[in-house]
Structure formats: C-alpha cells, structure tokens
Length: 142
Image 1: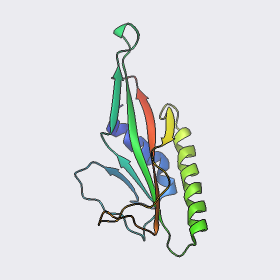
Image 2 (image 1 turned 135 degrees about the vertical axis):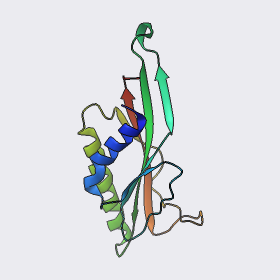
Image 3 (image 1 turned 180 degrees about the vertical axis):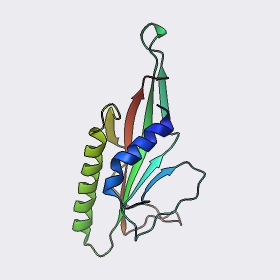
C-alpha cells in the first residue's frame, strides 16, 4: 500500500466526523482554504516522514510512514470551554475511528499542543483551535 493509499484510507476512516469536503489531503501544490463555516477540518499532510528498514536477513523490508493529521475547529458562537470540549470529543472520535481499521495505524501521538491555528497572515487565529497528530503506519509491501 502506498503512502497516498494510506492517506486516503485515513481520510475515509475519519470522514464521518466531518462535513463533506472538510477532510483535505494536502499535497503542497493544490491551493486549499479552510473556512469557519465548514469547520471542523482535518488536514492530512503528504510526504512527511518515511523510515525504511531491510528487515531480518534483508528479506522482509518494511516502510513506516509518519503521516501528519491536523485537526482544526473554530469557535463560532461557542464559549471557549464548549469549543475545547467539542475539540477533545472530535479528537477522541478520530483516534477511535483510526484504531478501528485493522493494520492501518501502529501508533498515534500528538505533535503539537492544542493551540490556535494560523490565519493567512501567518498570525495565530484567536477563534481557532488545532492540534497536529502523527499517525504511524507500517507497510510490509515495499
């Protein structure tokens, strides 16, 4: 299974937790824009980290992909505590959905603190909340 296939499997697994079109696979070429109206968002990074091992006796190689998944939401009309609670519930649901797919994920870890996301200006967007997760997957069909 290729890295792109893994990313698509991740997108499919978490899609039920997001509005249609709010799960993005960022190829670093296609212009993409998130909006407050269609939040929450999931942004899956491509070509982030790769570790390839030859395996025992050089006969069973494996590739470990570390795919970045950023979860992003906006406050809307909610108070800060309600936004935080909603975000934590979203994160837990996403993690649960990923772990439900056999052989897709070997480990999930936080890569950033829960903090505001950045606006187009590069400054933190005060009405946003985001966290980047690292999803570890292993492919034995190298």
